[in-house]
Amino acid sequence: MVAAGVGLGLWATGDGAGPAGSAQRQPSGSTSESATASAPRKTPSPSPTRSYPLSETPRTIPAVRSHSPARGPGWRPARGERVVVSDAELADEGRLIAGELGLAYGGEKDDVRAGDVRLALSEDEGADPESYTMTVRDGRVHISGPGDAGVFYGTRTLKQEVHGGRTAPEGVVRDDPGKPVRGFMLDIARKHFTADWIEDRVRELGDLKFNQLGLHFSDDQGFRIESDSHPEVVSQQHLTKAQVEKIVELAAGRHITVVPEIDSPGHLGAVIAAHPDLQLRNASGVATRGAIDISKDESAAIVDDLLNEYAGLFPGQWHLGGDEYQALVVANPEASYPQLARAAGEAYGSGATVADLATGWLNDRADTVRAHDRTVRAWNDGFFRGGSVQADEAIQVAYWTGKEIGARQPVEYLSAGRKLVNYNDEFLYYVLGQPQTFVYPTGQRIYEQWTPRVLRGTQAVPTKYDGQILGGSFAVWCDLANAQTQAQVAAGIRMPLRALVQKLWDADRPALSWTDFKAMADRLG
Image (cartoon, rainbow, N blue to C red; front, side):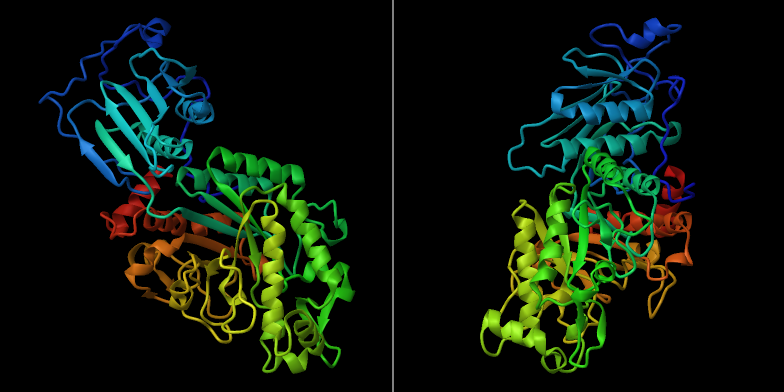
């Protein structure tokens, strides 16, 4: 049972009664279904008049970018009213919002009725496909956007506006996200999370207009998704492929891309446990925890088997990991791991280093994934300064830390033209048990101090690099897996997620104080 962390929790009545009746609408066109379904009700004209105050800006998370106020009664869902679409591609969005608000889904219709919610695709060529316009006028709602994602986000705004029996205010909302990547990453390798819990997070993320869910499902402690190519590596507690397919389908319906991560060449302990001959050993024969020996062809073969297998399960994006390869944290990697030094020389010529070999590994894995038409990213400490081999320019940098050996400032990546996703461990890392120097992040600190340009520590990079920062992701890491239950994790990340998406949607100083923002979040559920 999930506690306070369950999404916005907006209602849809089971008996079809719906929430309180619509406030003062005027019928137009054909007769309203509601007028024949129950006792007739008086419907005063909603035409702009001095009897109505000027509408106020909607209170939603994230806040809408622009609202043009108007005078009128606004809109509330009522029994018998319907959601209709102008384009068949919006059927899924129409059915979802209809069910959530207790309305009928009318399908693709051209007629106009009192109380209608109409969804439509606009013809704004070149416009952000996640943008939308929502007009509340004459007792009806019209949501349009250049893409179905934008229309979906408009339905999320409407859902929040009318939550708790409230009224969607008269006027026009014009809205679009500041950043294209708005993510949440979950470590299911160190701690098993149930499919139901993950599905609840998907619903929560969708209502908040997040668009990525990362699943880190392979690490030293576990491998958590069923495998046909290598069933021997899979942990006892795991998700079946059928469960993952359901999660991916649910996410797609909410315009969320599920981004998987099989971290390599480090953090492969669960794979190595089934294939101990692939474990990296130093010159003295001592095993290196979690690290696979990348001088062996068999190491690349098994990782590529897994990447190829899961490519069909996860569309769109892939996280390659690449961080904390233990061969590179010693004083002299070439002396400590002579087999890696030899392999580097054979592959890249005299003078090539172990770092070059690791970069070549990253590029090769990127090629494996890109063969399936996937975009890729890797942790920033999987990129190395200098050397004869450079990471492929198309690999996005998932910037999380500046604590690694030879740490590079974010500007070093940005000035080279790379695109970054912000995972700043100072603000966005929720590490179970708070090991080392980690503390549980608070929504207030994110809301008041963080922006997408704050990539490392508390210092923002120059504004000129803003366009290369694709967005950000909140990350749950389960280093001490039993430190919190699933319900405690859901409750603990609730306000940080809301604060984060507000700053990713609009990085400017929020209009509401933290106290007012939190009160609004508590009202929305």
